[in-house]
Image (tube, rainbow, N blue to C red):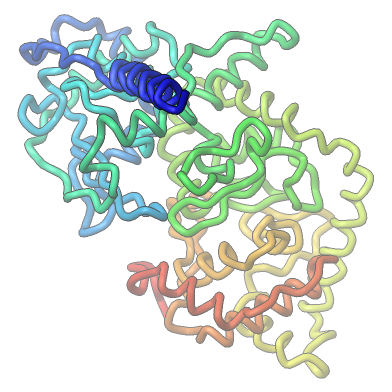
Length: 445
């Protein structure tokens, strides 16, 4: 009897192992000669440019550190809990890029996360979102990529354990977390909603930053979709009704933020979100940005909170007036520090917040569970190309100590919000400073 049981177990293991190896194995696709740019029409190339902009291809496949790098040549550093990952070269260079990839090879990479040579791609290449893209969009994207300048450049070696066993290890991850399939429209919603969902869930991969991840790096979906996440050390706030800001994001404000990088009642786009608005979504059809805003306005079922908006605005206005008139200065040393460092730009005495003077009481940074984003903006500042175009905030990297930043954070949290105080503010300020490896170039202090 024991022998029979062991034989059955062994048989199941052999069959299961064989089935998994079959699942894990993909053949290499043949190399092709680099396509001639002349074989693609101008209209198709332009459509491909829009797909690339909505997918942020340039952002993730262009080196940002070490003085930057050529467009699409890769070597963009992505920090993960498992080690650093460097993006690949996707220029038409046949040796270090994808110049010898066919359109079929690109489609397989996007839909199934498999490289031309048959190896499984790391999920940092977010094929769990790209799989939702249509063949038509991928065909246009291929035309655009193959008409870009070819750059001969390799990326740095990944510091990632599964890199050494891409077929088996990553196939196991996919078996657990990856479900391929092109986006299917939801008949319960209109065409605009479905266009927004297709972009947000597919090419634009919003959940890659705004959804928390589990121990193995997979997004916690569907249960925690858009509940908030982290990217490059920044907190990506929730995009659903868990967003803590006291003023509801309306569809029009979402559009302004995504298209122009600033919304008066919420502030400017900083950190990794800034290029999304300024470099990419500002260059695509307005209808697509409206569709994304329409989709997320529906996802954020926060209309019940509208009654609290007037109270939040009134509280912010009253506190700004107190700062402006010096009402806190005699009794609160933290108010004096804030007055000297911040209030000249951040006061707001008007009935509504004014562009160029973000009202901090309404900004997500003060309402999040951690002060990370507030600290990073203090340390990095905002250039005139970030946030609201033409309006800059200087870096306080050298002007404020960690304890100074902690005092300002504590003061703003207790005077601008109704939430409990943050804890360990000095320690968290030091941790944020480590994320900014050197004083930003726009530092004027």
